[in-house]
Length: 343
Image (tube, rainbow, N blue to C red; front, side, top):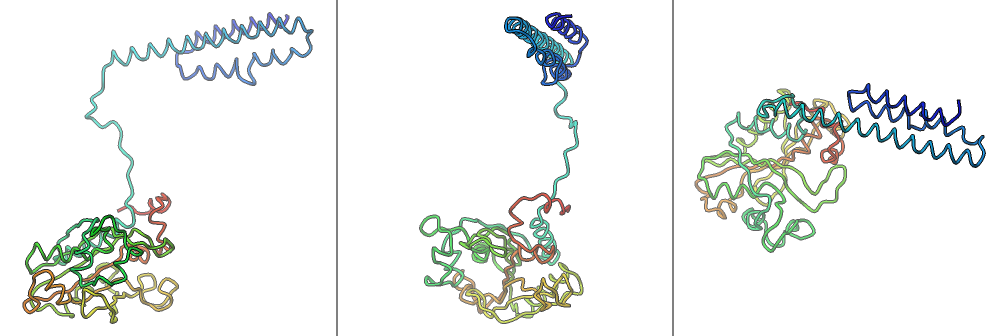
């Protein structure tokens, strides 16, 4: 049998194969069998080198005709089956789209969400309410109402994101102290979670965008002992009953006196490890009694009421609790990290 006859034998075989196929997905396999690099038609073309010029031209032309015909047969048959399937779907009708046909995959909570919700739950159990505030803040609430004078370095454009004159992206959640006291009368106990923004260079422990949780309590005869008792209770509920706290003098413009809060390292239980830099303590928040000047700025009488405030960094707490060494991991959306947190 000559090569030309072999070509037509392949065409006849392809016609028979096409008629047998009832699923359009199988036509790709048929294309590979007859037209692919290792297909039957390619085997014939591999024999052309042994032919003369005229015979090679004749067989090559016949091969192209057979190739085009096989491609046409496959395309027409696939289109016919597609029309049949479409007609069958239309005849069957549209399914009830209100009925869920598949169960969506379970998502994962971000570690910052887990920490935030746990902290909110602890403070709610202690009688605190939860407030939210604007991220685009007025300079008055962000600085002036909090006893931060015009020359304070935090007000410099190198440290804060100013949007327009008098407005900036809040640098802390503390502006809500003033906003809450303006609209509510004591007694009050509130926590405010939210994002904050500063012009910090991004590294393992700093980010231009981060999360804080502000706390404020105002009533008659609030003392530093109330602040210490509240934070100790929170620490034990957050990290376990074995937790202790340490408070050291510090300075913040809107609290007086002010303190730095540390808790016994949740990783080593205070036995000293690399996470707590072998001190047994983790610095976790700033706090203090509300400065009387802040009360005066809002219109409260510091002779009649007193209070305390605290601010905690959620990334800092999450890094300690979960042993995360680099703050940038929170914002890279790496599922290898995220999928570990099922609430």
